[in-house]
Image: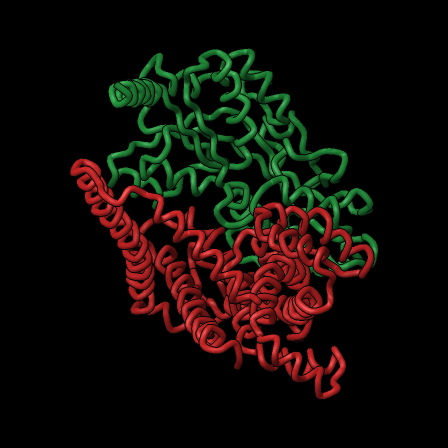
Length: 273
Length: 326
């Protein structure tokens, strides 16, 4: 008697698990796109409570690797896929398709007390190459510069490395942090620090400097005038089946609600400029 | 006195055995037989699984690592301090700065944690009142239960600004920051095991010392600590392993700059450890690429060093078990 009851409970649980497995959406990737992914996922959870949706923020490179290995349905990326990643994907019969959900500027931030408010790309590059070591050389106070970079799996790093560093190596003394919030908190607490974060992470605790004379804001970023602008992507394996959860998720940025979310998270919506 | 108590306990247990029915029904007999068989088989399986898991990890890490060590890049692995594996044009896999970084924060944290831990254990085992000891030991052991990411946040948000503002360091996320946090994390291990080995020293030894007119301090420093030295060494080695294997905290607190401090005693410069490198880069490394394999080679270096330390601590621990003296 007891055994039959136990068996019934187990079989019921198994069926429930099977049904739950039917509605799953795994999202992985960029910490920059992360807030958008999180907010979209929250909306979807409200609309469809039975949907099992997970958002992991591990970095663009990790997101790409996860999509290639079939560990996620949607890869959030703050850069385009690299050639090697594409090749690896095709080898695994995965055909990456890019959905551009928003625009973002990589803002160069310094401590609010730092008098320097204008830098050129060449100056920033010299800082990260260790050629300029003191803020005095840039018209600031006599304080050592502490350059802070994102780690190499970050898409923001990739953007910065390509546009600002022109793919040249950074100096050994550059500090590495593994997320936008950490870069933000390092600059907030360190007078001599300089770092780069997505537009959504700039607030009154840090000061974003203008690059080549252009201040990063919605207009300059959307039009690409700001030198360190980039689109943010969601990657899927092929174009998602029309009407599927993945499809609705990847096109949610087109809806009014999606655009509002993108704006409140500090990014620039594509459909409104 | 003590012997009597133990004897009583056993006789109670024996008395309980006598009250059981002596004869079992065939069904009960069968049930007992099956339970015995099943529990034996399942315990055997579980043990095999854990041993197998260790072996597989060993083989996996060494296999991938050895592929890297056979490649042309391996020559610079132990000599170059430049670690730029993701650089497109010219990737360099020089793990020397990572190894030095690991050694640096581990040694520094042990220079802090070993004396503090041993002194705390001495206090707890011989000086502290019984009630305080009963409270303090579990509380200290609770330190080990705090997730390392919490320690990491403490390092970044509290300790780093403190080091910068109060001590004028250029950057607060550096070797010292990581070492301080690692020291706190290693303390429970060191205190707990040292305290155990100090308590294991027979009372007669202390009493003999007192009888010869030694003070408490003399007994402690000249008799008890030397007698427990193998246990203390084992405790410090285990603490060192905790520190060298820690990943999250060093990834957040050490600054992750791939450099060897210059001058070498500059404890306030930021360094990067082997564990932090693996944690930070494993996700992005394409499977089977040289970068991926180089991370396994770094893991192999870690594995070998902790293996050697583990053997050493086993050796010292076995000496404690053999006779409670060194």
